[in-house]
Amino acid sequence: MKQNKKTTPKDKNMLELIIIWAISLAGLGIGVLLTAMLVRHILMSFGRIVFFSDEKTSDTLSANAA
Image (tube, rainbow, N blue to C red; front, side, top):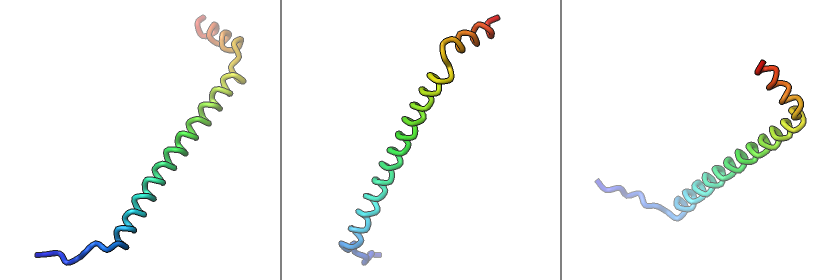
C-alpha cells in the first residue's frame, strides 16, 4: 500500500513554527528558572547578612556546644 499524502509547503511551515515555538518556550522557561534562582540566591545572601551577624552566630554556636 502506498501513501498518497504529500507534504505541502504549508504543512512544512506549520511544523517549523511548532519547533520554533517549542524551542522559544524552552529557552524562556530556562531563563525564568535561572532568574528565580539568582533572585533566591541574592535574597538568601541578604538575609544572612541582615539576620545573622557574627555575634549572633558565634553565640548560637557556643550555646549549642555547651
